[in-house]
Image (cartoon, rainbow, N blue to C red; front, side, top):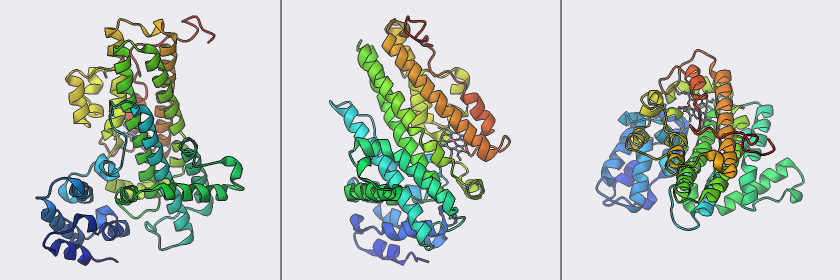
Length: 412
Ligand code: HEM
């Protein structure tokens, strides 16, 4: 077991060097114990380190304080979905209005998506061969590991193709392909990427499957973030009368959401017993707090008052406030442009495509939740659990119900 001495020594320096903070030792300790069980000696040493840097501003000290905020979230009584997943520590795509932003943001999303999945693959391989690998409890059987590796690779593939990191023809077998893509992604990692992957893995317990659970949630969040900024751009395009551009972008967004659905079969390899063993310690951290998911949803259509004032949106106060202060949705923009979606068959088609992709996402999520939780277990976001999801999956995506292709004179 590691001891916090190294952290005490760091804090004891006259001016603790931010770039030499012992992330390795801290993350190792957290992975050895699980965040919920990490000994007080560690949280006290981390609190002392935080006090030492409190007066420093900017640069790396900001990253370090964000990390300390995530590591000490339970101690501070601030544990939530964002701090559990360390979302602020990851290079998640954000709003960007500069020229060429769309392409850059997709590259950013693809890089992170691939890195998260390759890290998962590396963890699964490591633990299959080395019993000292972190999170030793409830290791999956070799059959489950094989299935998990296959699904992780499949989910990473489209991004790896776009980054030209993979050439199917040259791989002689699946394991060969795994080796090649792992090497390619690792070679591309910057020091910052490595640090982000390391610091964003602070599981609450020591169950093997929690690593996968965290990485899959982070990967979905990466895509939601991109889709949320896409939606903002789409709305701007509609407001500027650039309907064809809006339609093309919305169709691309639908296609990315469909593509990311390949993360579900991966998540479905979770062992229910392992999930139930770590889940009590994630209480208070639920994806109902996902800002990007709710931004995405509310940028399509302003939620009805009943949903807006329910835990669905009260769990994301910033998004709730933005909506009540007049955030413009795609529906609103179409109203203002006095342009029924039906008038532009391409926009109507892309809205249908996006509706289908979201609906599919919600159905798959609901079905998996029912399978893992059963009908009666409540959610970690203090909802009734699956009955909440059952209602939420029927929420209309757009108020402007785009007619079918047949209605607008197409070929169905
Ligand atoms: C074992 C897998 C999963 C189970 C059992 C599960 C269960 C649940 C439950 C019960 C809720 C209701 C809120 C609550 O009280 O916590 C919920 C909400 C949610 N989950 Fe999951 N979930 C799983 C995986 C995922 C994954 C991989 C994502 C991807 C980010 C995700 C995203 C969401 C979102 C966005 C909500 C909020 C939906 C809304 O408010 O309409 N979940 N989940």
